[in-house]
Amino acid sequence: MELEIGKAYFDVGYPIGSSDVPIIDTHIFIGMDVLGGEKGEYFFQSPDTFFKYGLFSEVTDDKVRSKVQISIIVPELVECLLDIEELSKFLMDSKTRSPQSFGVVSEKPS
Image 1 (cartoon, rainbow, N blue to C red):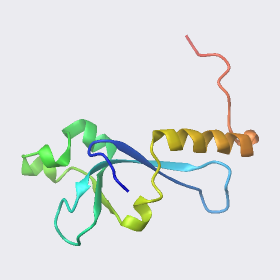
Image 2 (image 1 turned 180 degrees about the vertical axis):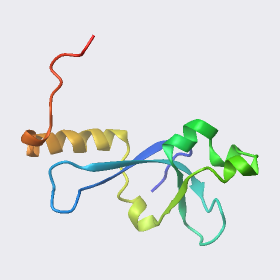
Image 3 (image 1 turned 90 degrees about the vertical axis):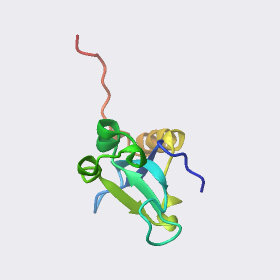
């Protein structure tokens, strides 16, 4: 799977005992083998630290780098990540499958 550095990808799961309302985690791809270690590892940064500090590879201050939240996702699980179009389709399919679980905002507050 080819991912773009600095772009968002989504991990979707369900709470134990439910398959109606998904749990969605957002990950920003920052590259492969970023910190050394095993070859073929996919590294991701949390969205909050991405937007606060920038792309991990571009952060030069060691104090700031230590605050950046990074996760590693093994190749087998990277294949399960969704892009925004896939996430949108997944959510619409979920709403169709379990309409009783999803609210509708009928009027926007002013």
